[in-house]
Image (cartoon, rainbow, N blue to C red):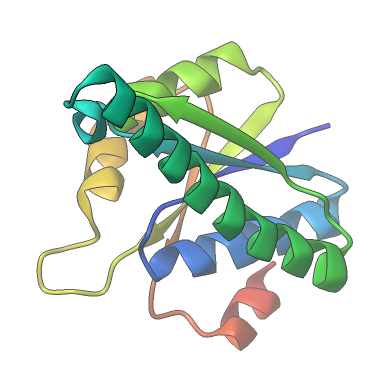
Length: 151
C-alpha cells in the first residue's frame, strides 16, 4: 500500500498537509504515516532532566497525534501510523523515507508568512532532485473546500 508521509510539527499549515494526505489516502486506497522529530537540542541537560524532557516531548506528540488520528478515522476512515524519531529534522525525514519503501509521497504544508514557506519546505525543495519520492506542497492558506476539491 502506498503511504503518504506527513510531518507533525507545531505549525498551522501542518493541518492542511494532514487533511490533504488523509483525503488522498482515502480516495486512492493508501495510508498515512505521521512522522514527528524531536530535535536533539531539547535534551542538552543532565541525564535525568533530559529523560524527563524526552518523555514530555513524546507525550505532547502522542496527544497531538491522537487528535489527528481520531479526525482521520472519523472523517476519512483512515487509521494513520505514528513514528517518532530523535535528531535533526531534515536528515531524519530523508532517512525515514529511505528506510520505508512503502512511503510514496511526502506531503508538506507551506507557511503563508513573509518569511517564506518555512525552513522544512525550503530544505525539501532544494533537495527534491535527489529524493526517491514526489513531494506535494499544500499551501497554508488553502481552504478546506479547495483541498477536498483537488483530492
